[in-house]
Image (cartoon, rainbow, N blue to C red; front, side):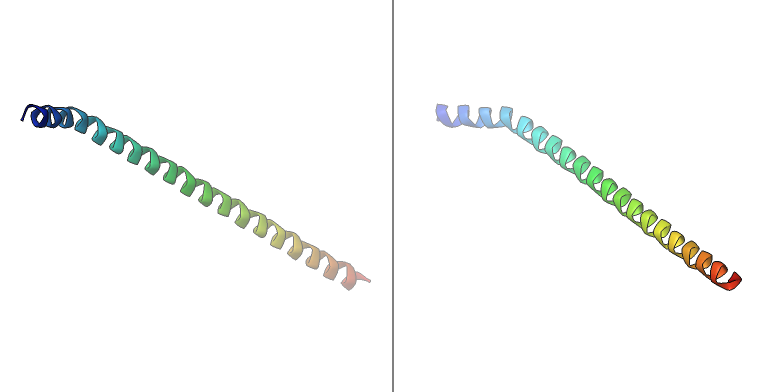
Length: 72
């Protein structure tokens, strides 16, 4: 009986610590997940911007070629 009581007391003392660590770990994982999501959004934004810049450059080049060809 004494061992059972001692085990139960040890569980009650350790349990909040375990729960706090689990909560802390979950918060850390959520924070990491948010940072990764933000990084993915930023990366996609940069890719889109690069593609738009390339499209603008291509459009300008085609326009320039037409103007040059039209004048000749």
